[in-house]
Image (tube, rainbow, N blue to C red; front, side):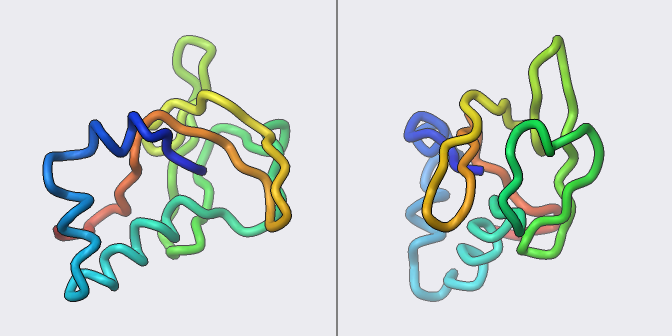
Length: 101
């Protein structure tokens, strides 16, 4: 799941800069891997419920008003083929539960 540039721009002020500092490398890794689900999941494979991320936590997939969401982020574009998987574009940066920044 890949956030849009607008999603990063709307991310809490200074959070991206904070995550990019060397001392926050582990937190950055946690955020990045929370956006990844193992396998080649197409939109038709993703159903409402818990999805295990590479980070280890689960992210909840829901449908609100007929529109799919994951961990509160709207899924705005789906099924973009890439050499290493399938990309689904989201409108928000997701944070793993319990991550302290």
